[in-house]
Image (tube, rainbow, N blue to C red; front, side, top):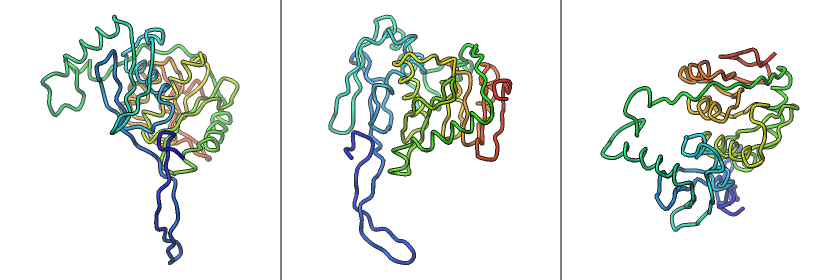
Length: 266
């Protein structure tokens, strides 16, 4: 498989049951991806080089760079010597906003949450979501079973996270994979935006833990339910509670735990 499609083939020596043999292994790609807005490089992410248009749109929306998809006029994927550039043409208004944000980064070193002037800016709290979507416990768990079967890149490499969309009919209608859990979610949100899916009528399922950024991104996209295979953090729970997001963790075959707004899971 071509490396700019998510994975590549490498020769390896495999040890099994006390014996070794040489063979080929499918390995997930992790590539520097630069997001360039109106000619200015804003950030470089390490990502799986697949579904990058979805990633660019989802990242731009969930990070507040764009307020709506219509503010992105063009998106071009450019292969560079040491990675990939995603060149975006955005509205002049949003570009001015982005430049102001970049000024806050100037002269700072060793900061964990750069570009902020205060604690209130460090953890952005989106507006509360208004989704009235309700799922049965059986439907939620069925969604995770569906997602597992659809993780093509994980099945090939064993190295990627997935974010999936459980639609209002209980079907996983979209899935995106990446070596980074945040990237997979951004790709999913970008894909849902392109397809004009009603993000208030469904749930996001993820194969990772639920950090505060995952909740933040879902709330920014007006998604009312986030369910994760692993645990949430305390800050994720706090933000989910404040933004009216139903947050579930430890979703396994024998149960799950709901940390906020349990009314949507019955």
